[in-house]
Amino acid sequence: MRSEDPADRHRFRHDSAPIEVWRELITKHSFANEWVALNKTSPVEILREIASDSRAVVRSTVAMTRRITEDIQEMLARDPDSSVRNTLANNSKATDRILAILAQDSESFVRETAHRRIRQRQAESDQGG
Image (cartoon, helix red, strand yellow):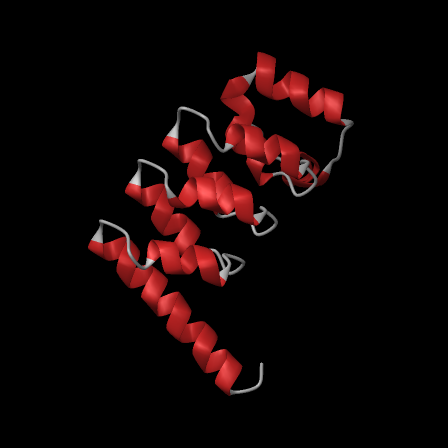
């Protein structure tokens, strides 16, 4: 998205569309996949499709999306790009199972992020929240 107009930015982040429009957008205009992932109304099935985009920036954007399902999280937890895996580890909605996978990652910074998130959850749980 190139517009600096706050109204345009808001529309792009919040406007919804029928599934056919989303599918056409990611098929014919894949350069927009990062923005599709940022849209708060894009369907989870569209996020699942773009989670395998060839560009790590798109996969990272999907990984930070709080509403992705555990199957999408699992796909991203095994992503070849460590920055994508680290972004997922920072996602507050990453499941305990996914954090356990990331806690065994080959990259130390991903493992450290996952362990930090696990400790945060345990502390929140201990405090009753």
